Length: 263
Image (tube, rainbow, N blue to C red):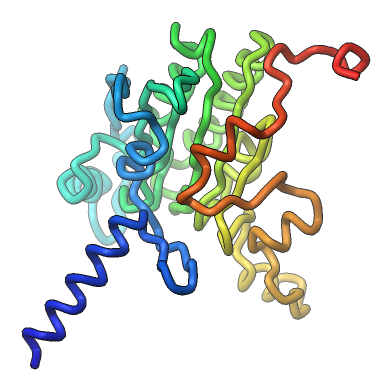
């Protein structure tokens, strides 16, 4: 009986993986790793990963219950990634793009020096000079291990996106579960188009922390994608299995023309 149950669990897991970790019955979106997300989004031909310009370092020599270097080595071994951010170049339906996705299993998507360098390089790469840029930002990791250096990452990446805007290239942000902390207060919410997955938790502090602070009961569905769509904070909610078909059709100002010209 245990063997049969194991086979059933294996078959269900295989079915989920083929369906991009979306339940085929109820549509619930389980979390999905950065690499399978980008592989599913990009055209199979011509996709390539950007090489890192630098590697994560332990600038603070941080230690709590364990050393930061130990946690870093463990995350690299478990995820087979050098850092939390995976950047790839390729195309979606023959439309050239530079895509970046955070790997939540890598220390909660914690943004390191390499993440900042990679995201800025993605905006300034030769490919991005003529391509749309897309990012899936789900980090929600503790900031204490990076100290004030962590807070410096967000304005730098936002400045890189400003440079992208000056070159009249659109930036599409795809918010996944969870998109919390500094990224939600910076580059995650400033896309030309902000897309979210169903039921994704999106915010700065978590709802429990907010309730304890304001001592009030929050509205039903607070900080979920549907709530934010209703309030106008995001543009659309798209099933994970459909963004490659939906995003290119969304009306974008590719040349960033003045409103009068567009009208």
